Each structure stands twice: as structure tokens, then as C-alpha cells.
Amino acid sequence: MGSSSVSSLSLTLSQFSSITNFALSGKPYNPSKIFHSKTPKALTLSSTSSSHGVITKSVPLAASIAILLWSNPANAGFLSGFSGIESVPGPQLPQVDFLSRLNEENQKKYAENDARFKSSPIVKELLERSKLNKEKNRQQIEDKYCVRGAEWGVGDCSAEAMSPDDRDKFISMLKKKAGISD
Image 1 (cartoon, rainbow, N blue to C red):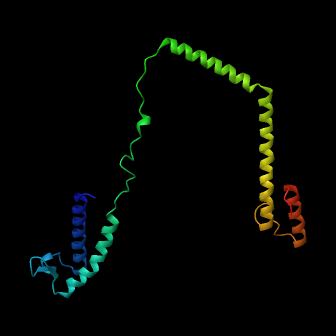
Image 2 (cartoon, rainbow, N blue to C red; image 1 turned 90 degrees about the vertical axis):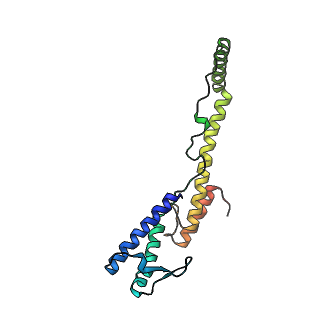
């Protein structure tokens, strides 16, 4: 926090204190009546009881307002607003014709090889098996969660409203379906 914030804060607090003192006592703020100097280093309160009461009431209020007004923004780091070097485009490299032709030829070869690989009967069979296994595994997981929900009495498979005998039959049927042994 800079010195300008501190000076504006002290100015705000002194204005608030003078307004508070004027509102409570009906007299304008006069610091010489409240503080007087016995020694150059020490300041003490004056002996008037009315100004002492005003200070003791206004200081905590002024401190609370100062804490609320004295906000210090959080900084994420030194370069928190910097987008990074990866967002800056690199220099344009010179184009070489023979390299461009070689790159195009390689791209054509790669596209042909990918098409041949994807049309392979072995790959098609493996993809189909993978889809079937995915569905089977999803169903097994759902069945296990259904058994757990029935035992705990929560979720879609809850057996709370059933009689104890029906509940046990229902749970054993769910376990048999899920392949869980009792």
C-alpha cells in the first residue's frame, strides 16, 4: 500500500472524527482541546470528560471504518496479467519448394495408410468388441451401484418401503444379476 493511500486514509479518518465530534457535542472539532503536549514526545488526553467520552466512542468506530475502507487487492503474482510467450507468433520461416513438395507427398502417403488401416477387418472387429465391452462394463457398474443403493436404502434401487423378507429377496436377485456372491 502506497503512501498516498495512507495519507488519504488518515485524512478520511480525521474528517470522520471531526464530523463525529461535531455531531455528538454540537461544537466544531478542535484538536487543541482534546490533546495537549506535556512533553514533546508524549501526548495525553485532556481532562475534560465530555471530549474523553466522545473519543472513546468514536475511536473504535473510526478504526472499524478504516479497516473496511483499507482494502488491499490480492495479486496473483509478478506476471499474473501476462499472456505468455506462447501467444506471440514466431518469425515466418523461408519456404523451400522441394520441402513443400516432400511434405505434400508424405501427407498423401499418411492419408492412404490411415484409410487402409481403418478399413482393415481386424481393426473393425476390435472396435466392435470395444463398443460391446464398454456397454457391458457400464451395465456391470450400474448393477453394483444398484445393489449398494438397495442395501443402504438410497437411490433408485432403494428397498426401504419393502418388508424385510421382500427386501432380502430383492437384494439377492440384484446380486445374482450383478454377479456378486453372497
